[in-house]
Amino acid sequence: MNLGSEGIVALTKGICNCCVKSMDISGNIIGPGAGAVLAELINNNQSMNVINLSDNLLNSDDIIALSTNLKGCSMENIDLSDNFISSDAGEALVDLITNNKIKCMDLSGNTLGSECIRKLEACRQNCDLTIDDSESESDSFVSI
Picture 1 (spheres, rainbow, N blue to C red):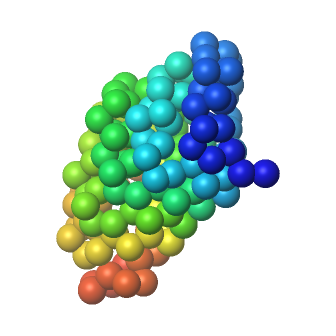
Picture 2 (tube, rainbow, N blue to C red):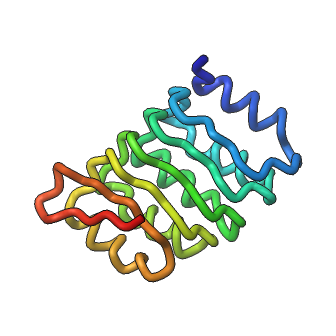
Picture 3 (cartoon, rainbow, N blue to C red):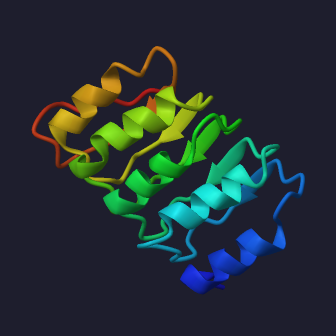
């Protein structure tokens, strides 16, 4: 089953103000264009501390929208692996980590590039990052 973009909107409305602590919506083709809706989903469920968004066709614009609309959430673990996130989302990823309580983020399987990875390395003291960027010009790192 694939939720798609319409399904994620319906899900967001359906579980508004619920006590959802963990959600796995991986592989549901909800992006591109789902960043703001995902932020609404998380903001409306302040008890949520784990979300798996891997393999959803999310792109850099989605991450920028997510970061812009998500501030001070209790999210501790977010899986963004195997999407289409590029170096354009570098600052947004840093903001997402520093402006929230995220302790663990998986970004493997995205094409982040060496500059983006350098920006994220500064966040490693606050957040365990998993990055496997085989298309980067520099050596990538993996932290589990």
